[in-house]
Image 1 (cartoon, rainbow, N blue to C red):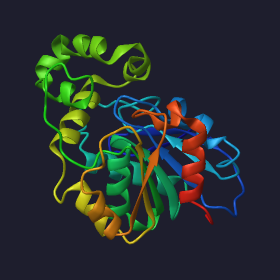
Image 2: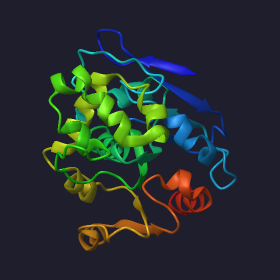
Image 3: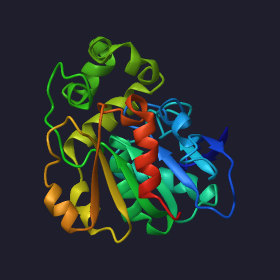
Image 4: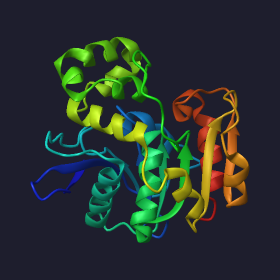
Length: 258
C-alpha cells in the first residue's frame, strides 16, 4: 500500500500499486461512488490482456483505505485535484486512466485540469450528466435526495437497505460526509459540464457501456468529437465485475500501443 498527503491539513490518499515494466505506460484505476479501487479493479489489472504495466488502484479521498476528513468539500473538482496531488507524489505522467461511474467523471476532470497526468481515458459506464435527486433510488440520486443532516442522522441506514449487501460491503468504508457530499456534487454536475469537457479533450477517449442499456445520450456528438463508444455484452453497471473478460479485452483494445 502506498500513500500521499493531498490536503494542507494532512489527509492522505492511499492506493494499491501493482508493479510492471517501467518502460510501459502507468495505469491508474479510479472507482465509483461508495466503492474502492482494489475490489473492483484488481482482477482486471492482473488480467493477461492488461497486466505488465505499473498500475495504481487509487481510493478517492473519503473512500476505501484513504482518509475520510469531515471538513473536506468532496466536489468532483476536489476529487480530481487530490488525485492529481497523489499522482504527482507517485511520479506519474501521461497515464492511462480507467474510471468507473463517478470515477469516470473524476478522470475527465483530472484530464481537463491536469493534462500532463493523463494520456488516455477509458470510461466505464461513467457519469457524464447531472442526475435527479430521488428518495429511495438505490444510488447517488437517492443519497443526494437527503440533506446532509438527514443523511448523517440516520438516512444512511435506509441507503444501506436500498443498495444491498454487495455495494454496501465497500460503501460502509466511506466517510458518511464524503459519501453524501460526493453524491450531491455528482448529481448536480459541474460547470462546464463533464460531457462538454470530455468532448473537448485532445487525447484518446473510450466509453464502455452495457449493451443492454439504452443508447448513450449524445453518442453521435461524442463520436463526432473522437470519443469511441463501445458496448459490452452480458453486464450491468459494474462491467468489470459482471463480464471481466470482455471488459479486459475492450480496455486493452482502447489502450493498445500504450
